[in-house]
Image (cartoon, rainbow, N blue to C red; front, top):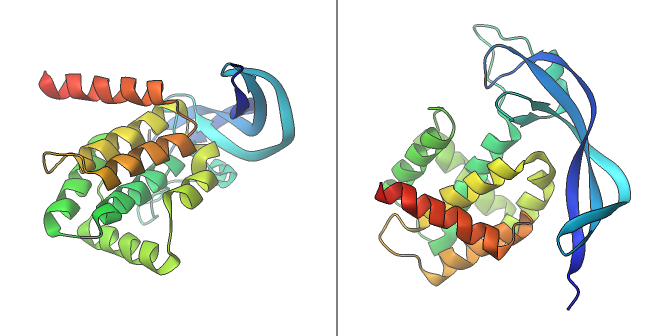
Amino acid sequence: MIFFGTKGRSIKIDSGKFHCPSCKVEKEYEKKYVQDWFTLYFIPVFPIGSKKNEHIECTECKDIYHLDVIDYQPAPDASAIESEYEKALKNVLCLMILADEEVDIAEIKMVSNIFENLTKNKKFSENQINKIIKNIKQENLTVDDYLKKVRPYLNDGHRELIIKAMYLVATADGHLDDKESELVMQTATVLEMTSAHVKGVLLELDNQNKN
């Protein structure tokens, strides 16, 4: 059987220095665009389609931002700029809360703690979580629709962390129900991760929890 498909790849087109909102100091950046490639047995063979989704990636922390981050200058009263990974993580965690169609304070606190652990102690308050949940309900947001839009701005490390975060939320009550399991695998598919890749990520997480 021949395995073929497509996969997005980030291509470097420029570089320079900027004030990284995550590192909080001046760092080197790479300007990249995303292009779909035809794959054969999961190996990229040749590019297809047009160039799209230009973005800025910090070479130190690997966080990804829209192009306007180049003009970012920190100020005492300025709002922090979130990376695309942080935005995606917030939305996906809230989608996990809604997976069982119930929202309780214990889940909200747990999501807040998971976000803090995966983002170098950045805060995700109860008010912020409730606001995102409200928006998700109003927009009837699905994992597929949301992640397809932000997927080009997530590198491999970010995609793995999102799967880990979802799994931590899903198993916090001691078991993984069918809806939650389906949502995790659905997310992995949208993020262009193979089932073997996901199993490896979750096995690594289980081993960390045992140690």
